[in-house]
Image 1 (tube, rainbow, N blue to C red):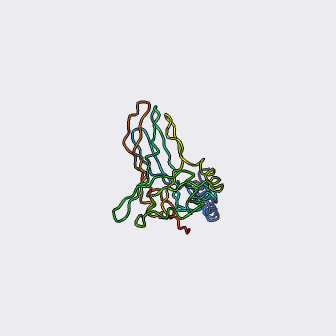
Image 2 (cartoon, rainbow, N blue to C red; image 1 turned 90 degrees about the horizontal axis):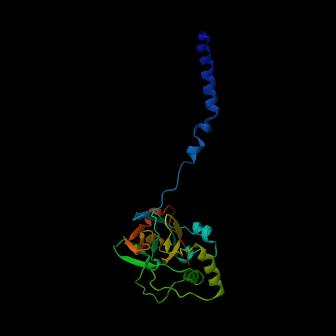
Image 3 (cartoon, rainbow, N blue to C red; image 1 turned 180 degrees about the horizontal axis):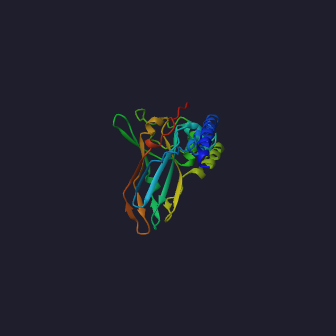
Length: 230
């Protein structure tokens, strides 16, 4: 039996080579072909709270999320999905009223933008153009639109409300998420040089304040900024 081994090896090696030539598509395992994983979202984490952001600048991505009629991106509005994860055994309260988008311009200037309610977003979608009385030197609108009471606005607002971040308390060892909407007047490139600023955060029940959170949007820009027309 030992003397037959060289003969068997001589026969099997060419067969293996021939088999390898006909099975070249299997050279890359399927697991490796799909091994790429999405990049982690930009975040700020301290005091047991982690805040991540995911800005929607691509109109098609936003359309898939909100639907065609309620898509805020073509109206110049930036939706930012915010994820808050509490790693402590205590509830954490966020003052949503003071949350802003801090936009940093290339020339060194900065502007703070307040987020919009679902009704305000719907008003700008139905009645585009922003606030015509806003000062022309401003690169972003300062005025907050007055929600319209027409039926079309209310219909779109109804579609947007389930997506909005409407809770200001993160439960112990829990998490919440939702969208905040910012009117950037279609200047998405500048918006992606901005940061979400969350200044007022406190541990409950004794309201122990935490240091402010600031999460840059730049690292989350995995797709080209939107190019939209009025």
